[in-house]
Image (cartoon, rainbow, N blue to C red; front, side, top):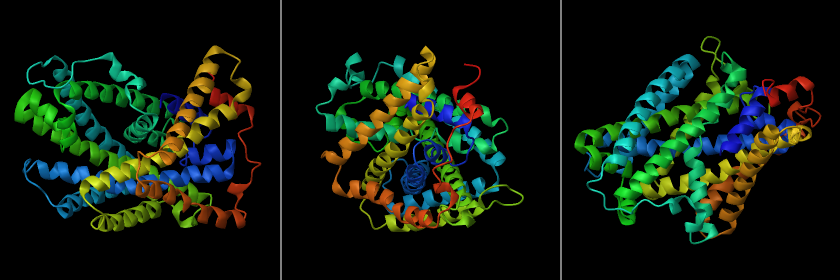
Length: 419
């Protein structure tokens, strides 16, 4: 994931574009692959709206009665209300959006750090495994397919840092916006490692599997009801904030595609005062609300979450892998000019691209995922072939293969003049 974040960082320097991978992969690899990258962002983000609304609604209702069994309709309904609030915030303008994100994320991370660090030194009440460095070894997995299935979920959990790239056109210092993705990956990595260690020391495998919210259970085990309630707030803020960032990402991706007329031009329009892509934001809001309604007829809350996470992981693997490959292809003549270039634009991005390709292929050919999840993940991507073919036949400029990252200034920006 760090290699992919480095790829986004370099590519964002040379081409500040709201479409991010959609633009970069087109200019470096092929327009069709660029379009699929953009489409992967759109469909994964849209599916995610339902997946994120579920824990947002569940956490909100848990504040009132933590032990109650809430209906799927109530959970989804409350999540949909939060979604509409976040859609209004995103439509109101990027300044309001970023301030709301700062507030929610700061509170969430503060609670996570307090609970996570306290759990490391809190020894009473533990009935899990003793700490072992073997937890960090892929060799502890029983098979490659199980490892790949876990990697697919991990890709989903890391997903979201790249929204910084979609906002680079709107950033005051767009050339510096690329730092946000790398910082995001590092913070998320540290928090996930901390909580994975804590949870495995405190709880047995059966406890983890049967828990509705294992992070809340951890907080309660460490600090009683008070910390338990604070963790519920952290979970709620986390999912609400993620709804907001996902809305930003999908609306900006649709805006870039509308601007290039690879989707209807209306998506490329912006509000004259708020300077936000209101049509794109409105469209994804409507589609997501329809999915909320449809989710009422698709199994349990757990089924919705599991299928959505795995399907989105397949789509993430596609556009992350293509973007990571793009930076090495774009700068192939400079990879071996220095040790830092070999590491940061060669080895690490290629490692990220290769790992995403392995994760995708292993999950599609293996038995860890059921057929329904594979159809959702791949089928949603395949739908993108329809607008791709339509607008390619109309010969819109986006599909002109002559538009490449070629100028010396672009290459210098990609490499980073300070380096």
